[in-house]
Amino acid sequence: MPLLGPGDHFPPITITPVDGEAIVLPHALAGHFSAILFNRGSWCPYCSAQLRAFQRQAETLDALGVKVVALSVDDEPTTRELIATHGLTFAVGHSADAAAIHEATGAFVNADPLHLQATGFVLDPSGDVIMSVYSSGAIGRLVPEDVAGLITYVRSVQPA
Image 1 (cartoon, rainbow, N blue to C red):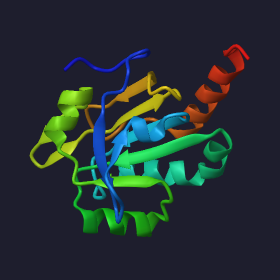
Image 2 (image 1 turned 180 degrees about the vertical axis):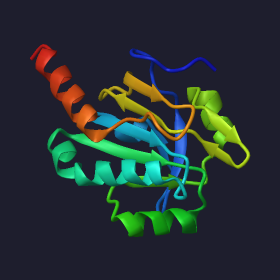
Image 3 (image 1 turned 60 degrees about the vertical axis):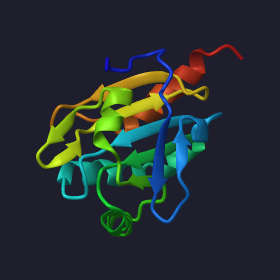
Image 4 (image 1 turned 90 degrees about the vertical axis):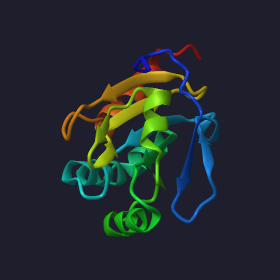
């Protein structure tokens, strides 16, 4: 699978948020700018830091109309604990099929232990990729300040 780049339509991916019904991305985000974050799992301190950073910027991102969704291969109880520990208010999916996510998006996968590498996408309201960040390891990931700045810029250059 080639990597997704600017202008590519984000492929349909079904995720299951903790204690929620399955949702299909990018359809569930239609009409909003969005950030989709794949993370390695609750055991990864860099992933936890990224999720906490997005939570700290929730007010700014909400004001810009940005929806945030995160996903990992962690099971539901582990993901529920992650959400509680960090006070996350955005949708966090669990039990991701790493191979299917790789096939759909090109996200890198670690085989043993099985997990997705950190991957982030910023989508426009129609579900097209504005920016993608692929990491092959623990570092190098999307940060909320960059998402807010990018969306502010995109809005400033869009015709009214």
